Length: 575
Image 1 (tube, rainbow, N blue to C red):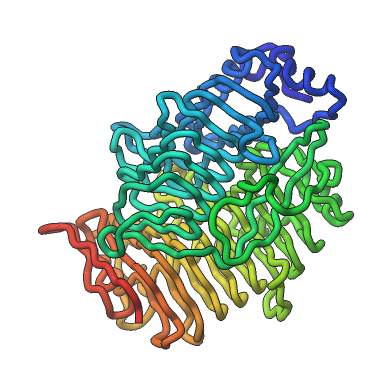
Image 2: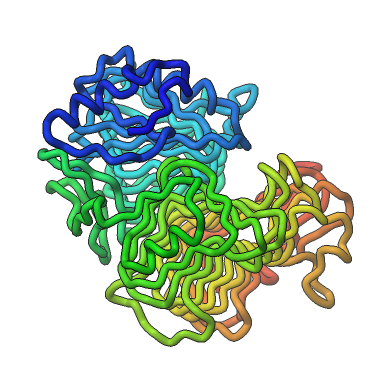
């Protein structure tokens, strides 16, 4: 391992001791770079805690920093506290979550003052069990904070001391006690088992959950879907009893409820890590593409990859997996990643960060006009996040463009920055967050915010969305600068193209925060008036007293406002 031992102020021998003990058993420990810590049960708890604390000290307030980190726990028992900061991924390496058990205070804290977690982004936990200190685990997060394949042996709370939070995502997870959403504005839980759920605010969506909470939309604002129609869980790193490293690729599931691992190992296949090209941020796009062309899968270790050309996925079944919020940043106006129109590709665990030279698209899946179907082996995009500005100047016309049919989008936050560096109406320019041209594309956990035209433009037939959260742009300077057509103020957040005959969506929350007076949005959702374009459970909310949203969907719902009192229109079904 190349930990560059003094980086964190802890001697190399300390950082290596656990992995060396594991290697002594005959296992070969892969070189995952200096920003990956691999912990073994034989490592003294004080040494593990020292590394965790050093990472957190760097990442606690580093909202737009350049560091990326992954903390990996080999199977076994641990007694440590694990605070999780920005750009930090905490992973258990067992085949099932209970193979790695942490007893202690494992938590995400609010990144802002006054317990405000509305900017607590870019952090994740997956693949282990937790016995929380005092029986309660705090996971105070907002967007881009996936909580996957976890087992919480106690209760959970999704905010900090009732401060605001704006999450969030939970999937393939069991919570023995109760999940309290508290002040969370919205949340999606997919394939979750729990003792119970309490709390609501604007938009809570439950899909394939074992114990649905009592109550019906609009009060409380619960959207309940009994089964998950089609999904493939995100692939994950695992280490078996003989110390062999691999990536487990879960099997496709249809009409599912609950977790994949209750009966044992998640169904699927394991790809040996030897079949992956393990990339480092110093690697060029040319070198990575050469490995992909030879049929290698791709594991991107933590860091920022400044790309002078797009990474190209051309082989069916290729797995692209990022660790520690590995970040792809095109620097010459190209795409960051393109996927050919082939079966069964996975792109997971990546942050796409636009460069200063405008890219036409950041992630493109398939080719324009393709006709192939992938029903039996669809492409999966899981925990893929996009950012235009914020860390630095960035521009991209479209963040995510899907041409391929049957694609599954399993949690994404597509964000044109509203704060940070390089932010302004004429600075971090971006037309659309998501454009879908393929047929039968299914999205779970779709968060898209602040783009200058349609946040989502859905052109393909048969699309389905389970949960949508969107803030429209804060910064249109005038109404003429923010007008989609004659007699229409602004650009709808969610637009289904006029010729589409079949589309369905559940649980949508769209919010306005206009910063300039006299800017309005005629409608939050704009769809063809046809019986098989169906929307269920929609809400609009004004978060500031400037401007307005006049209708929720087409001409239905009426206006949202703050003064003289808050009005949050809700529409149960359309048409």
